[in-house]
Length: 198
Picture 1 (cartoon, one colour):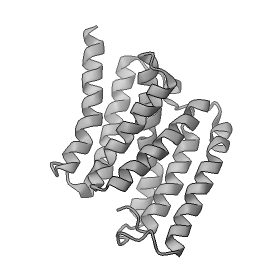
Picture 2 (picture 1 turned 90 degrees about the vertical axis):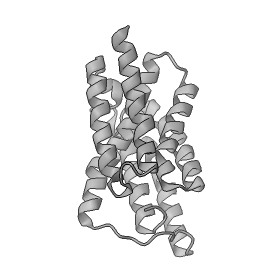
Picture 3 (picture 1 turned 135 degrees about the vertical axis):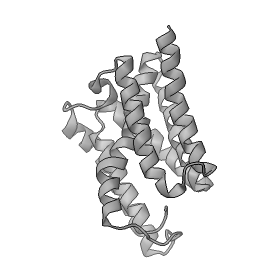
Picture 4 (picture 1 turned 90 degrees about the horizontal axis):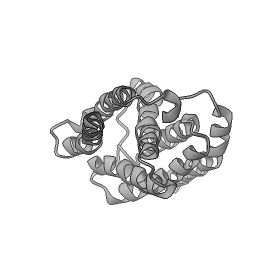
């Protein structure tokens, strides 16, 4: 019982405090992706300490192809939306100031960790708590949106909450993170390149 209580306190402290510390500039905004990476590693270690299997967190070789197929439509729609925003000059809000090494980090580390944190890990935790699918998807998406308070931008919060709901719904169909990771990479790269997010 003590282990359970400590686990939930530590886990949700990471989810709630990490974005807040970036928001109030205790952690520099410039280090947001690196802080998130450290948070992801800590959550993974906590989940393993709690006894969670990789498969329970979406880290599995099962259903990889199906996972990717299930997110194709979402990925395509988000990609085309980003391109149309760029073409019609509606997406540019920030200047692009990232280099190639950032994009490598974003693709191979940041996006997988974000999907692990807000889909795989939370899904496993809420399944263990016997939450319904709707409750799990809603709370996970709310926490995913909350992580974006660092941008101080209400449309970003709405967008991430909406996309979080769709991604989590698709993730639960296969319990494999590959599809949502690829979808995240495509949307993230497009929105950074067109200057929609920084």
